[in-house]
Image (cartoon, rainbow, N blue to C red; front, side):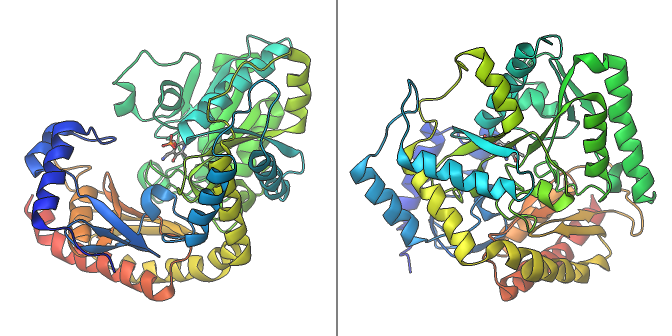
Amino acid sequence: MPVPASHNESTELKALDLAHHLPAQADYQLLEDLGGSRIITHAEGCVITDIDGKSLLDGMAGLWCVNVGYGRTELAEVAYQQMLELPYYNTFFKTATEPAIRLAAKIADKMSEGNPDLKHVFFNSSGSEANDTVLRLVRHYWTLKGEPERNVIISRRNAYHGSTVAGMSLGGMSFMHTQGGPLVPGIEHVRQPYMFNEGFGEDPIAFADACVKDIEDRILSVGPDKIAAFIGEPVQGAGGVIIPPETYWPKVEALCRKYGILLICDEVICGFGRLGQWFGHQHYGVKPDIIAMAKGLSSGYLPISAVGVSGAIVEVLKTGGDFVHGYTYSGHPTAAAVALRNIEIMEREDLIARTREVTGPYLAQALQRLAAHPLVGEVRSLGLIGAVEIVAEKGTNTRFKGTEGTAGPLVRDICIKNGLMVRGIRDSIVMCPPLIISEAEIDQLVSTIEASLNEAEPQLRAL
Ligand code: PMP
């Protein structure tokens, strides 16, 4: 067991954090007011521990990524061995390394389960970089095909595709668009398949059809010969774990085929078992031309991401000379070696089938216990990702008036106090635990949310 830091050490680190460190996606004034960040020092299995010795069940797998759980000694050993042998080499100028090649072949094998033509892999270090690669690659592809005016990409409102300029432009989060623009031009945002908020009480098939019609209307208004691609997360993660009706993706795919538009799935969260398949699109039975992946690829042990590309697209790229794109760390051998072993762990422990057949259904059933709670408007999950919608009036999707969007963070903070790390997104609590989570830990996760909702209720009703 880790020894908690002394009071002095904890105080010193918090002061240094405030003085020098700018954490990601943070309100720096608020952090100062709070006296600094929560400093995580240790983790094992599904449990994280902070500098003051408080342990929390990690209901978020870090940031939707630690799929094989914490404390995997063999991943540390693989990194150590690879660093001794060849810590780094690049893949520019006709070079490659064994871990990058073997990882590409392994990913191709997993992609082929859904689409046998998805067999090529381009490496990057983060999900955002993967989507930057996607954007450049898609536009370059259409230029090589002699259709340079086909450069518009359709995305969805409230989508998350990263934080780089291309990533946040592709994403549909309006509060992100207000910072750091102008945005990358040529990106159109259409309706998201968020039934609880935007189609409450409607028939799911009719709702999915209306969302797909919105895409088609946009294709027609922009001009079908100007649309390069459609991009979407199979299940929107950061947007609030938005699980579309089952008919949505097949219909989106049919629309893309009708107008000759490339289909891109952002698998950064859904990839590597989250929905009970290697990739999220495989759950919905569609065949994208390009996919972006990161997070679960290495379970977050080292930064690495990848873009899966179809053979048909690569044949076109071959006609264009150099694809002048790449990163110093594309195919980083140490990160690739760790990712490869991470996938081997998932295979050995059968984590994908376990998620699909055992823990995913168990989570769905456990969440049902919350469905009757007076604050809960809906519970939903697929595999090991889920959400609880918080409402002011049972049986409706009406939020607490004047506080719209704050119920999630409020309940989240109480969950953390009660020993559970989850995320609050607007008026929902979302979860995405490591795929190794046990049934007992799922029960703990759900009962902590329930206790926290009980605790939050008087505060919310008093607002
Ligand atoms: N796409 C999706 C679907 C994501 O969820 C994320 C990260 N949450 C990204 C892209 C960006 O990944 P990164 O933070 O590694 O750049």
